[in-house]
Length: 69
Image 1 (cartoon, rainbow, N blue to C red):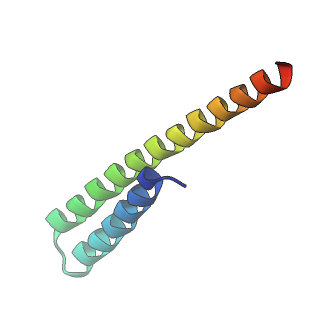
Image 2 (tube, helix red, strand yellow; image 1 turned 90 degrees about the vertical axis):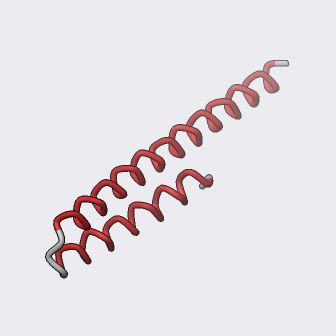
């Protein structure tokens, strides 16, 4: 797990809390801010996932090259 995945999950959770709080206090602006934070978190988490996939692919290529050398 990389830092983007961790930070993205944290933003997603914080956004869910903020959205729920907005619902509880009947604040549409807080709900919207919470949803916005969730979207940002999911995007950052997706970036982290892509980085992990690229790293895994790079490592696989390195292993393949080593085994054929």
